[in-house]
Image (cartoon, rainbow, N blue to C red; front, side, top):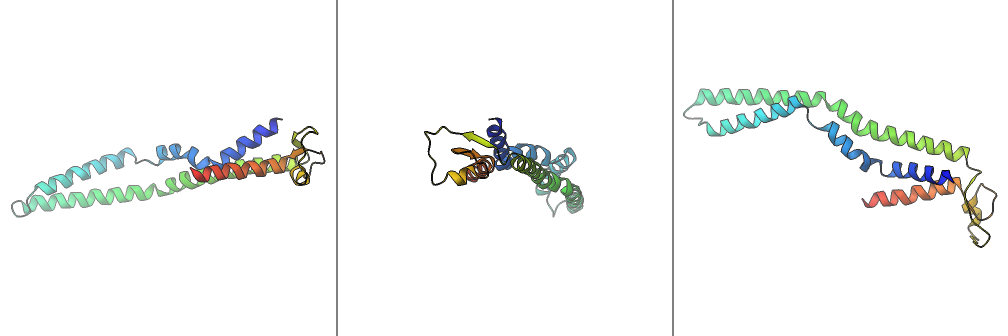
Length: 163
């Protein structure tokens, strides 16, 4: 009986992992404090540059432009340095967890493939599909572990596609 819940939870996590990890990724993928202060300083200098007349204060205008270019280059270099971390968090975490959950599901399915997840009474008749539903388990009116994993996977992926 516990296999029903374990397989259902694993397939649910595999299907909805992207939605589950989205808040965690957004927390880790945000700008660092240095980049935030540089961007804030960049905005302030841009405002100063717009208020400064090029004709009247040419020297001050050029100094502000140089500061802006320097800060912009710093922002670009800091964000480029962080790209490897971003790729690891965005793709490595997602696919690593999916692989781990899929591997656990695969091992459980292989080890318990001959066990029935649910056995129904004789009142239920699943013919002509009973042999497919219960394969490789030999019990009549039962749902096998591989079939249960397949159905759960299909249902949860269909639902995840809608969100």
